[in-house]
Length: 232
Ligand code: C5P
Image 1 (cartoon, helix red, strand yellow):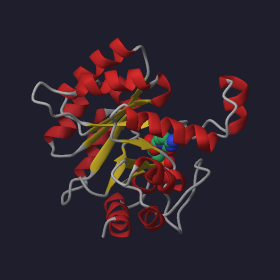
Image 2: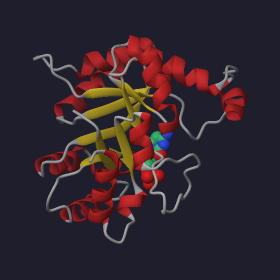
Image 3: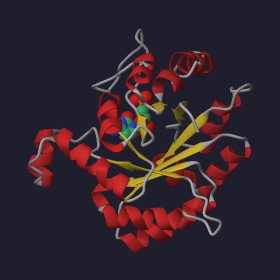
């Protein structure tokens, strides 16, 4: 899989999601399904979107004891999604268990990536709530290296960190980056953003784009613009 744009389908129901995807009559976008939609609609919505020919990043951010994560990942693997994720803070052993659970009897499996520190966590809350006192940039890199040691394929990170992650973990270690905005678009609640063209320059492998596409007047045109800037 090469560089691609993943649309964050942050909709509350299958009906809204499928009618949004109906607009894409040409190229079938890679879509991200998060907790809201999955908890509302369950595996059926994943199967419905897959049947329409989309690739899927199932963003459920698993974090539990290794055995539980392993068994849950085996269930997700049977849904035939393309990318799934877990929290790197669950430890190297948990990430290894996640990878084992995802691996099918024939040795194939979806790509598995780790969340390092959530972008909603800053230095101050990391120190006060989590009692982690290292600089947050170093914590992110340490977690990325743990993910690589556990045999994962990459991490979710800010596009601003993608270059450093590749330097530390290798060019083929995937960086999947949200926080993307068009140069002339609204930023919304994202704090540190980059355009698709900048994300491409810095070496992101996948960009996750939500509202700049889902809330656009013409989502198909916005998606094609994103593809043009990031891939084309
Ligand atoms: O609408 P927007 O482009 O901001 O959507 C970005 C998507 O990426 C959302 O689904 C959001 O939950 C997700 N995300 C993020 N920052 C992270 C991890 C995930 O924005 N650090």
